[in-house]
Picture 1: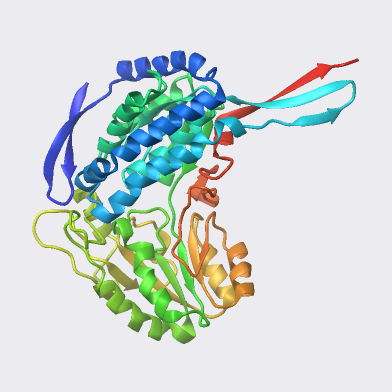
Picture 2 (picture 1 turned 90 degrees about the horizontal axis):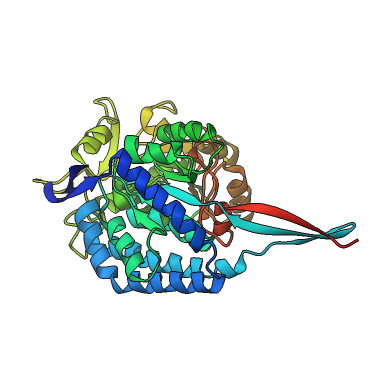
Length: 453
């Protein structure tokens, strides 16, 4: 195995090195997970729930340490990192209620009794992204474990530290060896082996649409189950009857949180033409007041981008001809910093409008009426999230139903809550995570007929 450096994006300093698994190690871990599955699936639902609650308690006791790891590894502001760390035990506690609620059906039939069961799949391979390491991981592994599967988690190469610690905490909490394993490694080695190994029965992937398509195509060779959470180019729609001041004040939080490195980012701000100029006047001080700086500072709202390469990619979207409406500040010196930026595109085909930037860059466009807003919002290959600002409840419902997106909020920057389903339309993904039915995504439905005649 080889080692890879882990870099603090706020200082550009190496924190530690992590061993990257080779093919032989990956196969051994998958086979260990398969052997552990035989016993784990047989654990009584109440006992499985109890172990998940113990896992949640162990994570809860380490929330501050996990938050500090995320600040150092991912550059997340400490306030955001604490919320992410607290989210993990919350989701585990929610999932702990699932084993005893995997209810089948009794179906009326002639000549006997027909019943259904939700059977676990086996080994689930989870591939997470670097932008939200802890939430993305727990959304997959918690319901998968609750349903009686074993899990091998491959964290992103850039941000493995919190996932590694979660794997250790699972064992310390009493989960049997092999039930939940964390395997750092590269996509072409570990991730690809999840796709090709016959003992991996499902792959859960969060990342780019391009890689998601490759994983989906590879899994098709074995008709392997997939859940994909991919890219986004979400719209923040502001109608003239909205509370314009509040919409402008909240808009930066819909795009600049986590430095825009969020597939749910509302990076297209659509504003009704009659209030367009007023909205921009109100947006500028909100952008300039967005606090960018040291992630360890309690007041910081936005940290650095994840790497120098990613910063160069984000900067590449702004050409000399790009009209910049306003920018915020960012620190000088070490760190992969990029300021909050708002641009006025020349048209709907500009790259800043059509492509996922995955950085703190928002494009503001005018629209004429409700139909025009819906048309522009849907003029994308993505469909993950969105927001509607209006005081008209009827319009809120009409537009929410008409915009082709998996999650949408009204007069709020809300994105996800773990007790509600989350996933994308179109090329933003396949399947749903979270919500009361999350565990069902990690099961097969078995039908059993018992003759009584």
